[in-house]
Length: 233
Ligand code: URA
Image 1 (cartoon, rainbow, N blue to C red):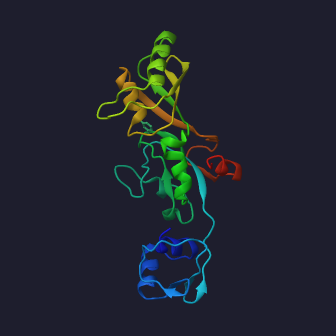
Image 2: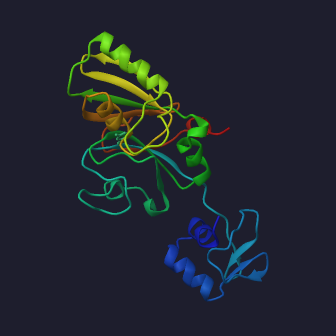
Image 3: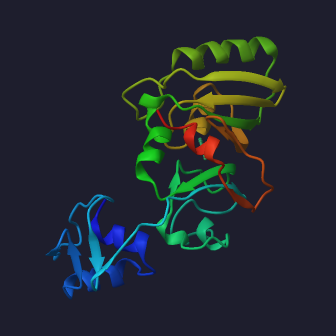
């Protein structure tokens, strides 16, 4: 990771203060004075601040129940940022693993471990994300079967060069379905239903891989070791 990030992970310094410490020659890496905040370092390197060896805090892994009208962003916009709603220590070190639209509710994972989040986001790992979808137009079971076959084969979304990856559709009732995706294109669920002539009127992410949302709206919790490890390998 970058040297300035390592300093943030192992001290109370924020990014700006970490850069200032590096520029004032207070930081050494394996005995040599560091001058470049972007220098790549490893946790096994001997990194010292004012002569004191630093040890990074363990990575964090959090599930959070996103309310509607909140932004998966570090800054406020048309709606408040998620980060302002949750009392999570050093929230600025965390990133969101797969964003949701402002009007989508449900499971959001947060971490400061970039490799772990890559396993979840990258389609190559085929990590399933399950969405509960409320539709404008009711679907008969025949119509659902026809749409399920299209989604399983992959459909062409406007502005995309490749077909969507195979997705699974399960009917809950006339106006509600569960859709399981292994990728996360922009507004994907809404665009998939628009492509088959329907409209999503409410969207909720219930599950990512083996992790199921089990905290109430607006609450968060740390993931268990088993949940964290379920995305590794
Ligand atoms: N697909 C969407 O259309 N919106 C989301 O928030 C997530 C998936």
